[in-house]
Length: 162
Image (tube, rainbow, N blue to C red; front, side, top):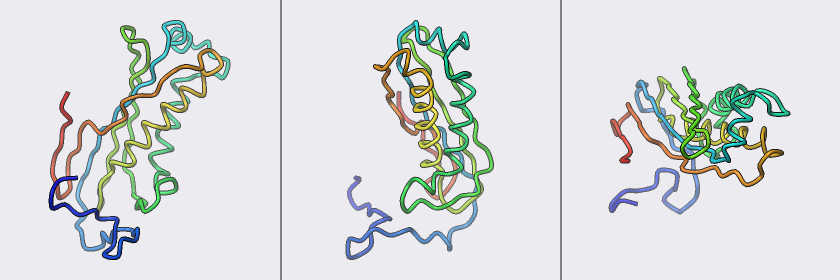
């Protein structure tokens, strides 16, 4: 943690608390998060050909990610329920390092950011991919889930390096 920064979810006595955002203005906020599911070339081919036993892997992952973004406040303690205005889930096959890159873009006009919604969308989309093809490959890896870009709100814009 940066020197001099306080954790907003910790009260003066050290107790966990929900941050009061009632005095903050509504602003447009957008967050892009990303992660990936690494798998063998054979498993990636199975996904891309639509031959997974459970059905359309990418379609299910896309819907799961959208639903997860909208329900983040039910999953993450102290997270505000937000009127999410848009969720875009992009699923990009990567043949070089076999796997699927999962990216979520989440937008809101609200009093607090949508980082948790974007990260939750990516996480659940990755988990759904794993679940849909785990019968074909159990040693898939979910990796590098992180915020890569943020716009809006008091702290302004952020772009991850690398």
